[in-house]
Every structure is written in C-alpha cells, then in structure tokens.
Image (tube, rainbow, N blue to C red; front, top):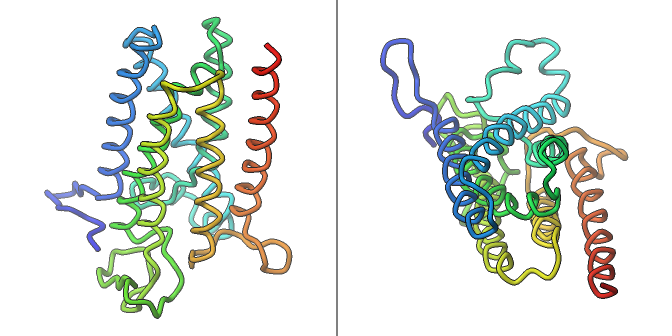
Length: 255
C-alpha cells in the first residue's frame, strides 16, 4: 500500500497518522452535533474531545506495546512512533472510560449520558483509522488463498511483503462504519442511558472476535496458542457488556 504519502525534506506525511487525525476530527464534529440535541454545549464537547483523544491514543498505544513488549524492550524509543501504526482499540476504550469517569465526576455530569454521546464517535474513528492501518500494513492478516487477498509490496509497509494476506484492516474498518450507523439510529430511540455505549462494546467485540481469526500479526499468545491476549480482553469486554445491558434493561423496566 502507501505508508508514506509524501516527503518534504526531513518531514514525511504518514498515511496512518493522517487517517487517525481525520478520524478524530470527524468523530468530534459528529459528537458536537449529537451533543447539541442532548443539551451539551459545543465548547464542553470540544473540551471532552481533547481529553478523550489523548486518552485513546495513550491507552491504545500502551496496550499495543504490552502485547509486543519483547520488541519494545530492545527498541524503547519505538514506543513513541505512533505514526508508524500500532493502536489497539480495546486499550483505547479502557483508558477513555477511566478518563470520562474522572471528567463526569469533576463536572457533575451523568457518566452514562456522556458515554452514549461519544459511542458513535468511537465507531467512526475506528472505521477511518483502520484505513490508515491498511495503508501502513500494520494489523495485517494471515496468508490467504482467497481471491480478495492483498499483496503488500512497499518496503516501508509493516506487513510481510509479496504474499497474499487477508485484508483484516478493511474488515475492521467496515465493521466500524456499520456500527457507527447502527448507533446513530439507536441514539434517538434509546430506552435508557448507557444503552448506546454498551451496544458499541457488544458489536465491536463481536466483530473483533471474528476478525481476530484472520489476523497474522503477533498479539501475544495465551492458553498454548489457542487464544491471543486481544481475544481474551475482547471476550471479557463482550461478556461484561451483555451482562450490563440486561441489568440496565431490568432497571429501566422496573422504573
């Protein structure tokens, strides 16, 4: 693919970094619009957006580093090279949730209302960001004998070169866009606060477990090679989200 768009002297515009930036920008614009209908001022949404972007980058990068710790022990400075790819969505969610909990307590807001507000943004941010993964060659798939296998030839790509691979990045991107549109429709019809956020986690986790079957990059191995660290974390998030949906729905029915 095209990991680098162009270079001017020492400056190089990386496709991955551009896609992540565009994803965050569109996510904030979408959330500002949703926030207006929920009675939240645009400036407050922008303030939250800055903190959430920072938390998402730190959390998703930290999770990726922990999953590839042997590599980064030998190359510690590479931990900061986010523009080369390497962000794990589940790690970003965990850090974002902790940040939103702190923010809502500080400003006396409903955590679940804010979580619902930002849920569509997380989905569309992933949809756009994964296109950057595809361009950079990170998060690549296993060797594929199918007709839709993708061959990376750019020497700067992070994927193995000159071999057909499953386009797992595009699978994740497509799931992000689909989840985004479902959540947008759900937002105006939700029955209780937290519903949109939990459905984000359920749908993302389900899609991620499917995509993980075709991933070929190293994500840490557990249980004798039958499960990756990412799969375990995703499975725990899925189970917790389903349980939470049932609990919140029962509370709403009682009320």
